[in-house]
Length: 252
Image (cartoon, rainbow, N blue to C red; front, side, top):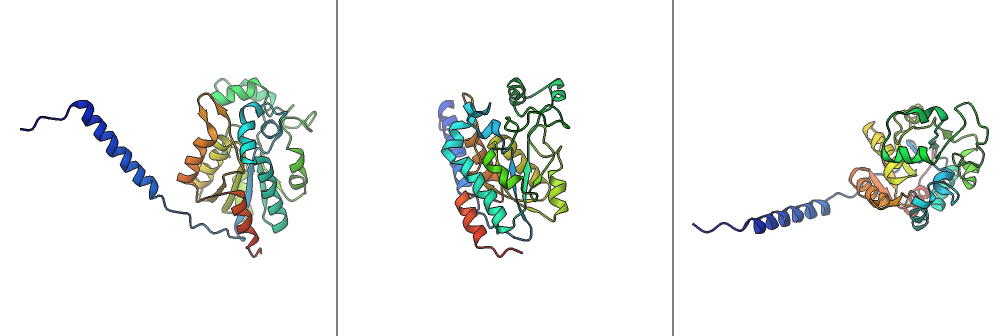
């Protein structure tokens, strides 16, 4: 009988086979065949707010590098402009905290951090005192698109996904089941919206450079999100690719 391979060598061989198999599987991920349908599509932007996107925002020290690298601010504005010019409905899913939300008895790491720095804080659900130009307010350059009387601003989501606001209702009531998704932040609210929209039967295209995320000692949130976007979304495109696709559409 031939002697067995040493345990360390057997382990190394198994890992090599698993790694090679994983590489083959990843290489075989099919390319997207999603086609933007002007009769069914909408643009959804998560959290286009000062606390994420302004250098004065409380999250800027964490996300600013990623926002700058991806040209996120300008790319979100390009999507908003595309929607306005081509008649694509625009939906905003904002994130607000009210004083009563600080009574939560348990929170995840980012929830704790957001509450500790008063991120997205408003005086109350019926109170806009001090809201204008605050961290919870929309980036000033986006306001002409968001406050045009046509854009739908959903009620606030409270953690990451749209399960507890009216975004999905607003989309369904307008016959939308295809979404061009962007906004902040990539591995939190944007990814959570993608997951829920997919689970609810929507076709989702994620705009990879119209989002960004925090870089912390534990990792790069944007890099993490890109992997999941590719695995799960119906399509992943750059802003330039979306712009080109939209300009070729015959809008209803």
